[in-house]
Length: 492
Image (cartoon, rainbow, N blue to C red):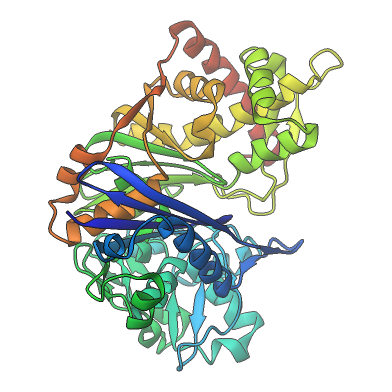
């Protein structure tokens, strides 16, 4: 039986896991951290070489206990990558500048100019089937064209972070439909580059775009030097991979109607699978291509565990003490309401917003209330978008929770009560990396993606939370108070 490698190149670092499908065991894992460049204008950037250095560390760690014979059994690699990042290469396939990331809001003005050129939000949706929030790849391209024209003129290839990892592994430049659907110039309904939207970047810009390969076709095999460096077989394939939201959906079994995924990472993402062609969705919802043939209407807030981590670090708490304080504060945090827009916000579209706390009194201004209000605010922000999806008729009987926030028992209960839904975690390693493994297994003809998901995804009963009827009712009022404060301050 073959083994498989899953890679997740996220904002904070790169994770690698090695999986044995025969025993359903992970044979190794590794991690390498990333630096990040930021500025007060909202710029968030990384050098692509940092991802490669982190991948090298993580791969060596994950493979260290495998014998040479076992390494040769690795049949495929699947990569999950942070979405929307802009990687630009010259004609020699050399990186031209630091990659601007998904959470870069310095490009907000450029994004609006592009939307206006396309005929406003309605024109964008008519062209590509989805809306265009700040953070998509195209906003960075327009910004680059305006602020660094000498770099823009040298662009020969435009790819995303995941594609760059695949390029490092295989030497081939390509992308997939899921990643392409987060660029702002890909038609997610017809699954082609949009000639209209591409031409608004530059008249001949289409020549810089990579081919979009099928979800179940290999990009290629690993380069000989990669095979030699890590002891892999020359026949080891590199699967297409996809953006982290798509791969997390696959890694949690969100590939059929009725299952939804919430990823509580640096950002907060909610996605739900549909096999029905999505039409008439609100602008705030992004439509992204899924694996296999389908779509995952998705909502994303920029401030999730970044919010709770900031509060935790402010008070200098270990995680156990942090969770204990969260649980000690009552529902609604005694009236303390946080709007955690520390990095600006994508949903609603408030790139220049900053965080604030309302409802403070001498009595309720306590550490537990501040902690709980942060966790509740993240749940409220995601619920706002989820309610819009429910209005479109999308429903789910189970919400599968992943990301760092899924490890907090009191936060899981908050999510269950705010969403009035059963919450369950996933056993094993990172959902994005495991999604890459499942895709690679399917590319290697081990079965269809849904079949592999049913066989290999194991639910974590210790991370199950059920809604409490009385608490659900209480949260309806607290949620409304959150919406009222947001409208009062930001008019949204």
